Picture (cartoon, rainbow, N blue to C red):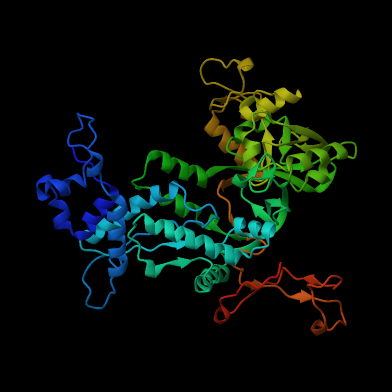
Length: 535
């Protein structure tokens, strides 16, 4: 059994398919063969003599120099007479951190490099570029801490990454090297954004986000750990902020349909479908007691359990929290919301113990007219669904745990078609037959769902609806080290004030920004460049 180093295999692959496939031990002298082999038989673990080991330092340097001088991996220039098929082999660009490459980079790049070499050997014109995903919060934070400008530290880091990648012998066309911070690249990033904006796929929206004042930016759920930013351990709070969003929800059905027939692992397909999260169900409106115009809207796939609702739960960031909270509960509710808002969605959903607090307010059951207490619970997320749930503890495990903890009523409205359910064992969540549900008693689950949905629609209290777990993508930027969004907003000054004499950046300058009237930068004016900053 012959063991060949990765570099020697790369050399063979670049010399041509015929020579590579013709390789056998007999093709080399005993001295040459020693360069490729540490043992000649796997059944004996006898190491080769030290002087026969593969001299990687000299061999790799020799061939890397050869590749560089001869531009071995340069992308062929195509003309109208070109007949070779084409292949584009693209790696995910690394972020050039100050720490340099880690082992995960070459692990992934080796696989794509093997494919690039293979396609070249089989007669394809191959484009195999590399670049740098060089905007990002770490460089900005480093600049704040040290005073070093992000553009300078990023350039230094890129040089380190480039040296390290070249030492690994990957077959990149280095003439095609790019960085996402290059102004020519930023121009096309901004151009794409403008196309999305013009077609209504990029828009402003109030979104509840993880705001970190210490970093001055919005963080993803994965960047928040126990209410603190992963980088710097700064406090994070959930706030509704005006954000740019890309409306990927417009393509939810298309995304799901596109999964059909995909030759992907079942786990990957399942994860994609869960991410899209298509649900066909019913929207239900609960009026708020004592408030004529307000209502709590919920979504459920089990409208048949409506008669089992014993409380309604709002997410801590739900916009109705403050208005439904009674004066007696205000202080406690405010403290609870403040505490819970420092935790990310991921923290809240993964927590084993659920927390909550009664608002002092009540909703009105749409079918019975009964008063239903309104609670706030951390297991309900403002970013998912309507940010409110109708709680049916007898038939939902989370609601059951919450009701058990806080001593709330549990009303059973679904029984198994056959046999009995041990009610002391927990919620019964399977389909069955409706009980304790008035006119819907005796109906099996599918029929009960249909009939309840129809009645709610007749009463203008809800109806059939399709929802998605998928949310529009929040397109937020860092305070500085990110591509500028090519949109500007009018700056308004008090009547009678000459704008030419004002500078909104100066303290004490009275002005407002009209965020409701965005203007796109003209494409001819791209790229919109980052300003030079002294601090």
